[in-house]
Image (cartoon, rainbow, N blue to C red; front, side, top):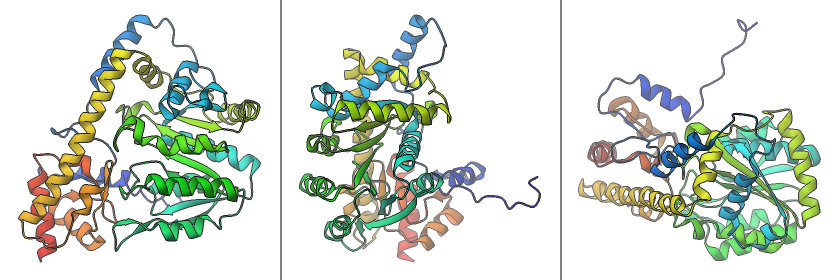
Length: 398
């Protein structure tokens, strides 16, 4: 069946990891895939999760199927994290949440839901955006449009250009927005700019679809969710795909959520009825373990406090590596200004390194970076930072 079919190209990011694994250079460094590394270069299991898992082992009496939307208490815990415990969205039951297989699963279920009832809608994504966004929505049958986001000259958001495009997005189309720690640029909108975007969504009638994969990696759990609170206050329809892969380090448990917010409880219930139909013919119901472990932490005061502290450690280490990277290049005589990297947020940085340098770093130094120059700052450690800075300085000073 397959002999006359051409093989599909490797995933741009995961394919880089496969090449990294085959590399025999003992100094090799993977700054491509979006996985947090501690200073030993490991992706640890959080202590709060280990404790939650022990509790589950002791307390669980069955491995029966979860309901189609997942565990109800998990869904409520997700909502409290997204909106704040006392938010009217929760009290009025305007939000419906399903446990999805990761944030990617949440995006795809949301895409399938929208496509079912808005078949002519287009999806608008930022330039640039996460490499998998276009693939997810194209696979769901959507046409993709781009809106301006990152200004290569200022190393910041080109909000004027972004605003001009978004104000002309047709009613009924969908605009995909990164809530915080924009991937791949690390550059986020200001509070005032979010106010303007919420007003555009309200007045123009397009549907916001919020991708929230890095809550807690920007400034804090509370401040990172402020854009979502602004949309909730506006009383409009919107969707949120969220993930616990990064902030709970539950990468291989595929633990995420899709939350659909409607103007009232009745519409929210209708939306959930159709989401269930979509899930049933896709994966039927979600995997339990990661969601139940996260729920256990989110509903236990002591474990929750421990989790907040563990996320702060990850966030602060990434910030320290940003500073070390910029200072390391400066000490090596690099005259190009990389100070903007310190101001970027989250795991990723748009480094400004061109593809020629990216290719040379991989070929000659076994340093793996995504084309376009996106660096996973969390892949830098005190053990590899000097090697990385030496290599980049050599490339830039040639």
